[in-house]
Amino acid sequence: MIYDRILVRYGEISTKGRNRNKFIDRLRKNIKRALNDYPNAVIQADRDRMFILLNGEDSDEIGKRLQRIFGIQSFSPAIKVEKDLEKMKDAALELFRKIHKPGQTFKITAKRSDKTFELDTNEINYEFGSHILRNVDDLKVDVRRPDLNLLIEVRKEAAYISAETIKGAGGLPSASGGKGMLMLSGGIDSPVAGYLTMKRGLEVEGVHFFSPPFTSERAKQKVIDLSEKLAEVNGHFALHIVPFTEIQQAIHKQVPENYTMTTTRRLMLRITDAIREKQGGLAIITGESLGQVASQTLESMYAINEVTSTPIIRPLITMDKHEIMDIAHKIDTHDISIRPYEDCCTVFVPSSPKTKPRLEKVQNFESYFDFEELIQKAVDGTERMVIKPASERKDDPMDDLF
Ligand code: ATP
Ligand code: MG
Image (cartoon, rainbow, N blue to C red):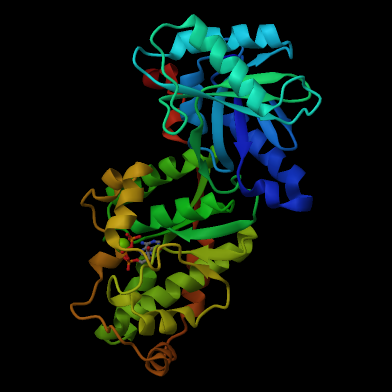
């Protein structure tokens, strides 16, 4: 074991004033859950940083887990040393020998928050640099672009030595900022929108509209599989499956074909809003991106959005498809999203949906039918399931026996 701990630097939570403790506590819980299968690792949180004491656990493996957790700016595997100059120099040299590869240049970067320490930062740089140069052959210093940057940090309680700073996922600790309902189709966009919203600390629940028998069980499974990926962030993901067949059939009877898409979206939004209210959410999230398809022109959004004054968060609104796809690859939802199964909206999609629907018209078409009752029925018939991440799913060997 090279390192004995990982130093975790908080992201924006340091700017959160009063809420700070709550944020730190949430981050600590999220890290603890992510490290569930490393029972020896111990988390020590204080106001401006966190340490994960490895107690023999592998720092690379734990680092991989940490990289996915929101609220972490960066982290560094490190060793803790007593504040005794000779011991510190020996520890630095020992660490250096373990990680240095022949030909690599290096430098020392000292940080000193304990101003009573016998050396200042320049002196630390010099002392440690020359100690290592004396003891390792054919070594060059490069202060501009070193291959290895040995960080010596002298704090009140001890000194810490580390050699790399690994970028974290940024954002805010998950589930620290209220709840929103994600309209989750089986497409590429909405899972990405959900992920980005979670990154800002929101707790997200999915709402999926399902129209059997026009859409198959496999289409539903796809959304469950996407939810499993989103569940990686918080350890679980609640998914609401809304029975939508009856409403879609009613729309097709009541509304002229070129306006069915607009009405469908309006009703989806109304139902999502009702579920949101029941679940105590404060926002709705969609994967809409401006101009991408007929329902995502500004005119369409204006006509659709009219049914609610609940904030609608559209994280992808100005993104290009390729930018969205890059994120989908990163969060591992892309390959699930491109499975070919039909979605409720593609089955009923009109041949020429209005790209510039007029609000008065759609209101007029909808006024001849009482959708309220069907909306209530759909909300009542909604199934809520709580999905676990695939990585945590414990396949019970007993299952096979029954
Ligand atoms: P996506 O890739 O997310 O499906 P898209 O580019 O295919 O988006 P649309 O099909 O027009 O665009 O959908 C726009 C948004 O409406 C989606 O991002 C999603 O938030 C919501 N939506 C569409 N279909 C459904 C559905 N069956 N259930 C829940 N939400 C849906
Ligand atoms: Mg879609």
